[in-house]
Length: 451
Image (tube, rainbow, N blue to C red; front, side, top):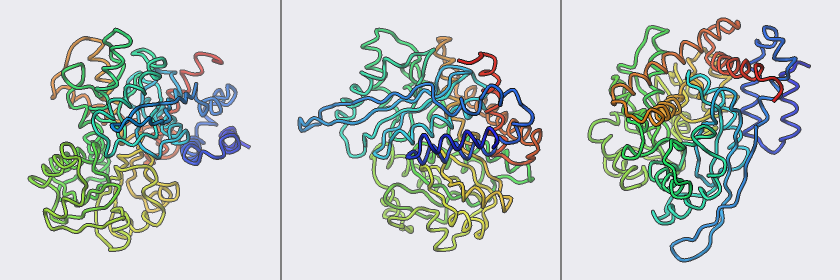
């Protein structure tokens, strides 16, 4: 048995209940097989086995008091996976589905995503099974303060720098950063996604969505196409989806869908102009549900269905798919429907939104497929730029940060294609992204010896 297959089997045995983590490890490790022959030193040093074991997994109690005076208890997580090339870096997710498996899969993926950014960042992830939906500002504040009362022990600007993820926006980062400042008596770049007034970076909010579309534009350029006139399906309606829509609109494409946990709206005339502004206000100010868009603009609304269900059931024609909601939202049947309905390009705005079966369908039909660790790396890249600005005690202009983001996404795209070709997988973005990120981290691990 090869070193890679042996490592996968060990994960399946040791972490049998962690399905998301097993899925992520299997996807990444299988694509690394071309590296075994070229790098026997990795096999000898057991890099493949070591890289799938986190440096540490921290689980802790988060007690807080709601507005009615009732004590609530949640579980907090921080998995510090690998800091071979820099301090641990990765978001905090607040969602009822959060468990150790999900945090480990996210942290594992983050290692290679961060390595691709060209910045010195390690990989980690954290969060809690707390649900911020329908909570008051005061309840969210009390939770965030309690969460930070434990997390502060494990983070620092040169140790571990968390950011936002699902359920964590500028509001939550503000509460956490404020409490960290209070108990540590220091103002340092220990969290990213901060407000501009206290150390945040311009473009950080837009970065993941913008970066995703920059990556898509580069993918399309390899087949002499662009976004002008293309019909785009986007899932989700949070930060990533919103700014992916904005950038697609700027580059001449037409986005026809958004969704939340309750329903999906389809507007074949395009979500742009006044309608896009309505979405931004609905989700960021009113914190409303996506069905309100359908009620206002008299468009189709599909309750309990994703856009991928709608494409499968209704035969909706699209050119490009941007899944920006959550993991495993596109399965094998969805993938087949996308291919049959004209989709020739898919890039992942969410983390691991496609099952392995779906990915195999895309690859079998030569769909341009941009994996999350490459396509959505713009967010963590700009978090790294925020860290740089904090260290330098200065702020860059919007144009400068956007240009740096654009250059980073072009560099990631090139790294994926170069690695894929060098290791005999020409044009395979999945293999290229995984190999390029892995080799960089593996060489650093090798340099340190057995630690």
